[in-house]
Amino acid sequence: MKSSLIILSFFAAGLLLGISRIFPAEWVQSNLSFYVLCLLMFSVGISIGQDRNAFRQFRSLSPRMLFLPVMTVFGTYLGVVVVGLFFRDRTLTECLAVGSGFGYYSLSSILITQYKGVEFGTIALLANIFREILTLLLAPWMVKYFGKLAPISAGGATTMDTTFPVIVRNSGKEYSIVSIYHGFVMDFSVPFLVTLFCSI
Image (tube, one colour):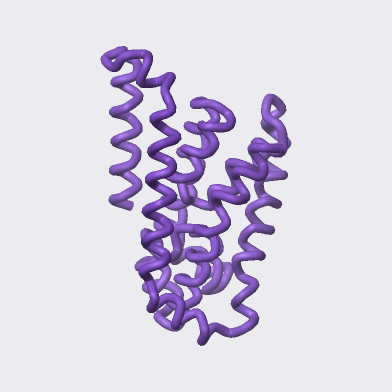
């Protein structure tokens, strides 16, 4: 929750600075966001590569649990298709690109901004932050009514970092490995799926 509020604060600060026109227009029109994206992808690669403990834990997973990320993708896209019916000014592929962020707001919003512009990148940022916040707030309710895997699917790409503590607290420690595995796979899929739908 704290990290989401920090991200929102930086977004709000950037919005206010943009409105006030403090920074030169050349900065906005440059490839600065592309270089930030490259740096972000580099740091993601380092964090995944260094977590050797996670690789060892994956080996003990039940074969049935290996398909959980696939079901998360399927459920997310099903929800996006339903919600997308109400947005007639946006194509289905654009809506699917936003859904493909799976809560990974920092990476997905930058990618979508590169392909679709600042307005749609902002929509992606807010949509994915809301996904994380709702998982943090509603995890106990999800477990009670939909089962212990529900907050893991709802958390999307955040289940091995920001939503991990609340998942372990509500679903149980036995689901910690599943949560880490799920977050790892979803993290890895975001740049490929977002780019795919933005390119169509």
